[in-house]
Amino acid sequence: MTNLDEELIELRREIHRRPELAGEERETAGLVAQQLREAGLEVTTGVGGHGVIAVLDGSADGPTVAYRADMDAVDAQTNVLPFALSDRVFDEGFASRVPGVAHLCGHDLHTAIGVGLARTLAQDSASVRGRLVFVFQPSEENLQGARAMLETGLVQGLAPREFYSLHCGPFPAGTIAVSPGYGLPGLDHFRIALPDGDEATAAALAAEVAKLGTVEFPKSVAEYHARFQTVIDPETAASMREFVCVAQWTEQTPDGRPVPNVLLRLWPQERYLELRAQVEQLAAAVGGHIELTGDPFPAMVNSAELTTAAGRYLSRALGPESVAWAEASWPFNCEDFALFLNEAPGAQFYLGVANAEVGMNGAPHTPDFAADERAIAHGVRAMTGLLIDRLAAR
Image (cartoon, rainbow, N blue to C red; front, side):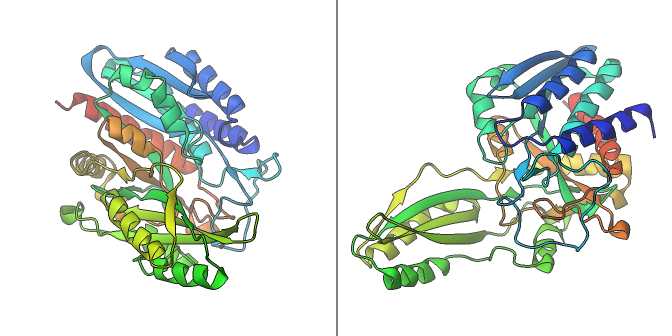
């Protein structure tokens, strides 16, 4: 293990000990900015909240490629799946010191890998033919950070040709999953007003809305893994099947009337209008109507072409046994990296962080999430090579 590997593990542990919720990533952003400045990069802080952007100009002219890492932690009581994957909770001495807040999605690893990438490439800038932009994003968990950073115009001003990111996944450490043409679902949320409704009417309507779904929210370990680890044929990877996941709950008005809420997780996002119209029709049949709570959030769509190219490069560089071609999309959360991919094509890859031999599940948003820290060095080396390769592509 190199000195940099050890330093990145310690950086991850420091972030893990002091997790910060979405919008509160002040200390994490400070650690990131300090390391990037010490590496000689041009650093801008306070971008869209606590966002950090660092720029590395290489030794020759070339395209601009961007890489994003997210920094926020989660509310450990409310933002996790309703089941554990094991009966073991890991504590190697760097557990969260902030009550109720924890890095259960792996953003501490994402941040450490992003810093490692920037430091590694800054030390070898002669191999960088073009410009690299490193985006450290706040507020991913509440889907606000990417939009806030883009609203500053700084990312667009750097005009990246391509955009990439890594996310932890429940694959074995030492592997990377690529998903050409696939991604994560979009979200649409609305309320159903029932002027004369009662609980029976609301329940009957909810049952009809539920029939619009094609998949259910995972209810078990087996369902989780089946959804997230479906290996696909790389030659037909872009033929993503459709799915709709319907979540519902009921609120009460001050006078006690039920108000059903509907949250649609869906792929592809082009079905938003169709599904809204179907729910509106169901609501109208019982004298109600839908009230939109905002614009739908877009699905994250990996470029089929660029992801396939990345998968082939990684297979050559790491060995084909280290690359899984997988269906990453599953009905838990969406991902606001989608907004960066609307600015420039690219992909999010899934870095395996599981270690079954010791019970580390590597499954984000589970109460017993644990990751093999050796994956940090693997992610740095894999993405370093990929970014250099993409800058060389014409």
